[in-house]
Image (cartoon, rainbow, N blue to C red; front, side, top):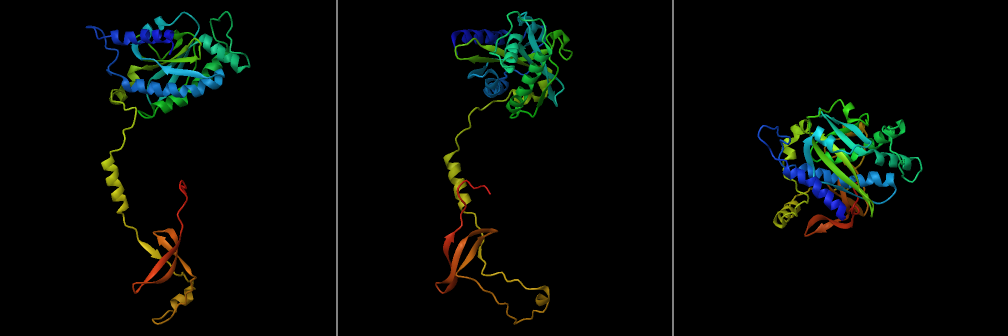
Length: 312
C-alpha cells in the first residue's frame, strides 16, 4: 500500500476510535467490536478482484479499510459534492436494505469500457446518470451480490439483490438521516494508479438479529490437528471389523424347480480357478480356493482396489 493509501486508511480508522459514547447521545454501535464483520469485509475484498479485473481489463489490488459506524446524515455530509451512485441492496430475509455507493466518475469509466472505449469519463461530469449509466450501476450491483452473499455465508445466509439506483440520496425512501449505518469501504487500485473507493453500508437495526455472531471471535486460520488425537483416530479406524466372504457360485433355477426341492437333492455349481472375494457389498479382489492348515481357505490372487482419487 503506497503512502497516500496509508494516510487515507489512517484517516478512515481515526473516527472509529474517537467515536465514544457521550451522555445523552444514542449509542450508534450496540455491537461493540465488529471484528467478525471486518473479517467478512476482507473476504469480500478478495473476491471483488474477480469482478473488477474483467471490467477494467487490468490487474488490480483490492483491500478492505477499517469500518466505521455513523449516522446516515453524517455519511452523506462527508461525501464530495459530485455525481454519486446510490444503489439499494435488498437483504432477504432481513427487513432492512444495504446500500452500495460508488463515485459517478468511476461508473462512467466502466460504461466507456463496456462500449469499447479506453475507460475515460467525460471531461464535464453530468449531474445525473443516463439510462445506460443506470443500467451499468444495476449490472455492477448484480455482479457484486454473489461475492457478497458468499462472504456472509459463514455467518448468515443472506440473499442480496440490487434495487433501483439513484443519483440523489434524498430519493432513497428506505434510509432515514438518523439511521445508524455500518460503513465498509473497499479500495480498488491498479499498479501505480490512484485508488477508487467503493462503499457498502449496512443498517445497524437490520443486523441486530446477528449480534452474537458479529461480536464473536474470528479464527482466520484453522488450527493444526492434535497429533495424539490423530493417532487415536487412526488406531480406532484401523480396528473396525469388516465381514469378508467368498462367493463360489450363484446358480439360477426356476420357481417350479425351487418348489420341488427335497432334502438330499443336489444343486450343481461350477466355478473357475478364481472366485470373487467380497467385503460387504464391495469386491475386494479374486482368490483361489484351496486349503491351509487343514481348513478350507482362499488365496488372494488379485486385488481390485480403486485408483487413488476415484470417488465413484
